[in-house]
Amino acid sequence: MDVVSLIHVKRDNSRPLTSQEIAWLFSAYASGDVADEQMAALLMAVYFNGLTGAELRAWTGEMIASGERLDLGGLTRPTVDKHSTGGVGDKVSLVLVPLVASCGAAVPQLSGRGLGHTGGTLDKLESVPGWRASLGNDELAAGLRTVGAVIAAAGGGLAPADRRLYALRDVTGTVESIPLIASSIMSKKIAEGTGALVLDVKTGSGAFMESRERAESLARTMVALGEEHGVRTRALVTRMDAPLGRAVGNALEVEEAVLALRGEGPRDLMEVTYALAENMLELAGLDADPREAIASGRALRAYQRMIRFQGGDPDAPLPRAAHRRGALPAPADGWVTRLDARAVGVAAWRLGAGRARKEDSVSRTAGIRCLAKPGDYVRRGEPVLELHADDPARFAAADEALDGALTVAGEPSPVPPLIAGLIGG
Ligand code: URA
Image 1: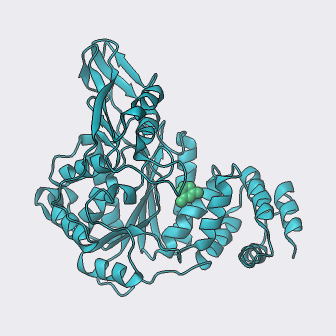
Image 2: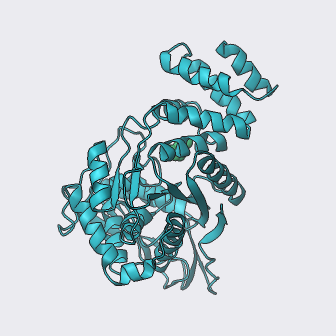
Image 3: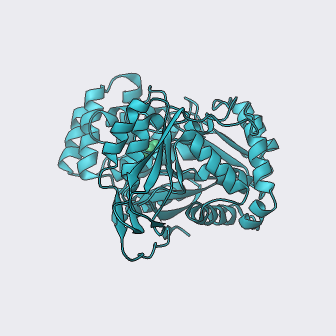
């Protein structure tokens, strides 16, 4: 086999690649016989021509086989995980993972870092004093046995082919391809060893997949891949037009997540959290009520144990930004009908809450508090947001990102339900 012929096949869409050809491609790429520029050309051909179901299954299988697949079969609890395609203010995992663990499941949540305008769960938890993201496989298993939940950095042994391919896609304009995204996400989740998985595929202005149609197509593709590889998988398609909850930024989101675990979470955050929890518990075969787990304090206790297990102090005060100021004044008295999630995400990122490149560090304290959200009444001149930063010089760039992010109307408009669809049996 030679890679140039495979590139021609995919470029001209003359026939599907066989599973033998895909296996050869991954092995030749790993050994250095296929160069980065050749793989990049093939990725661009996939970007334009897609992959058939059989090609995608083989492609994902090779990504999984490029590393280790964790065996969580020795646990007495059923394993179930969740993955979100990322949204602004999306701190759902911080509430959901201990919540579902407190209902009897084991949740092995292994994640990467946030990139761009959506934050990463690990970055958020690192604002808790002492908490560490890295766990060895033995520690991971011990955490699942004793606490029932871990949120940790995915080790280098899981789907290493994805790391190389993702880095290549990032610099060659080939990230936004449904089969490439689906295989990237699912190879890592399948390799992590979970028995069941619920996906939160976001759609709307703050989401990676802005259009509903593409979000549904990504969700269907990922559900099929999970099921084909023996993981019971469902996807919720959820709206991400406004930030989720009122806090955006690492420590600010942890603070809001703890409030949610105490039963004082904002309505929209709880709507998504409970819908995901119900689906996770059903797939795990557990008959438990997530609302009761919050009301009784069980979920909060599971969070505290999970944080302590990873060296953190759940009672320590969270860090706070040195500088705060109001932003986005309401142009008139009236009801907020739009607060653009992407603009708020970009503004929080410019304040220091997110990273542009993998190597960048993030501020624990920078971020945004939403003083009003769609459905709230505001008075002319009142700030709708409160910006938090370590360095006040960052405020101007955040203001610029927020230009045009707000609509205030004389009449309230109905806030649509956040759950837009469910895919999978
Ligand atoms: N997240 C991933 O892990 N992979 C992608 O391709 C896109 C988002």
